[in-house]
Image 1 (cartoon, rainbow over the protein chains, first blue to last red):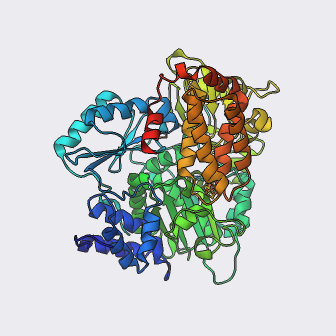
Image 2 (cartoon, rainbow over the protein chains, first blue to last red):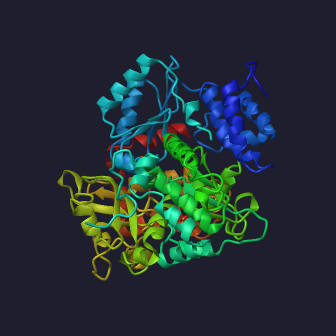
Image 3 (tube, protein in one colour):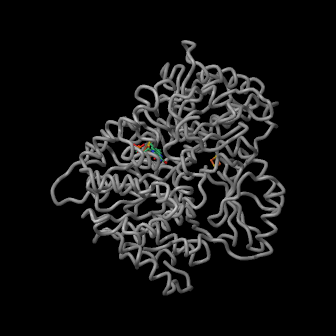
Length: 180
Length: 447
Ligand SMILES: Cc1cc2nc3c(=O)[nH]c(=O)nc-3n(C[C@H](O)[C@H](O)[C@H](O)COP(=O)(O)O)c2cc1C
Ligand code: SF4
Ligand code: FES
């Protein structure tokens, strides 16, 4: 299963992937699946197309279905295209107690989309997520690995403006996959 | 002031770096263990300390360690549970972010005690930046000869790796974590066999929480007896509490076990009282899974004694009038909080996070969410409240892993202590529902 795009890791990413694979005992390389799916998502526009997942399964010499079943289990993997900035607002207990609903509603109005949707310019996708371990600084949101805490409407407005004017894709960067 | 064993140096500038950490005594416990102790002696100190698992269940760590199987020629693993996804809990993030070397030192020392050549820190994927901090600390440790071959000339070799997850609460359950670490979906395994016998790659494995492993460092430093001298009864040592919700000073606090709950909530040293001068309504004391208690029962036991922050005191009265220390995720709710809505939110969470292997959990959590939704919309009946009770009782204890229980207890306790609020929604829900119900609308839209 694949679209026409060619899915190939850059040399640098490939080297990182191989370093990760070497961590595990012989025959247990599948342990690298989740880290490699993260790499693929960062490399291929922030989401995992079937082609992107196939690229990972080929590297690990596993069946493609093994990558699909794992990718579909974990909420951080996007199985559909997403905007350059995926805004993930925590909707769980403490954030909810301190106004997460209002924050979500505010962002929806501001971006003119609903939760789960992407703006027409492809800049933002809005998601709600479960507790991100930032409850003492609620309400909060995450975008591309960065935490934005103690949110107010003003803070959210400034953040969205800044992201929009920078216009760059925010992913967990590959540098984050430091290797030993 | 309470003594601090883990966060004593968290405010020191640059403590994240190896040289500063070492200047403040860092890695002296590891050195002591490697140069002056046998692995068995380290296990004995941990036993003597009375340390109990800080991940939620409170199982004695020394005992868990002594269960590890030691078949010849089979590798053993130490895995640190840094999945920290229990709503209301953020202490492990704080510890790893501030003092990463404390965890790494604990990992090496624990691995020495257990005879593990390799260890993994499994950290939730959303903590990516924290994983990076840990990786940097690990790189420093390798460079200084604290990891790798022949550590501190002791002949002990050890490698430690950080593994990131990808968003799944269930991967905090230790067997689901192991599955995930093997590159699979996070489906909990049926126990036995326990990880101590057959864990990662089928090998003997110990899984411990971040805070548990960090606590091994002061235990080695001052001895198990010194650790055990702090606290009350079987609740020894210090505990990190993540305090959040309607309080003046949310944050992570290291307490000596035994601080009165009332002092914890109201003193300036800790939570600083309820925000905006409101009254306390309820507390979820140990992460979303533990029973919720109304103000009177969290401050005092049913027998009228002052409730303390210990495993035993919080559990006093059983589920009829008590709760659990759990992960130490302390969520405080003021008088304006709707218990029914909060419960709906929790239940939605468990439904979302059920791995789907067992029908009582997979289906039951969904049913409970739907019924709560109906009640919140003012379309519920008194029979629905009884049905909720019935469903939770049929999930608890009947599933592969404790997520089923974790989904049941909040429901049971909310009905037990706040039944009149459910009835109020049944009677007047239509007029209450226009308050804030935005997430519920979405839930419908997304379904
Ligand atoms: C659904 C579920 C989620 C859990 N999440 C975590 C977690 O995020 N962190 C953690 O340390 N333990 C978690 N646990 C407990 C672990 O299964 C295990 O008991 C713990 O890691 C053992 O370490 P300890 O003895 O040091 O507490 C969870 C358990 C369940 C059932
Ligand atoms: S209780 Fe729930 S989460 Fe646990 S194994 Fe069963 S279905 Fe999965
Ligand atoms: S409840 Fe939002 S970060 Fe924990």
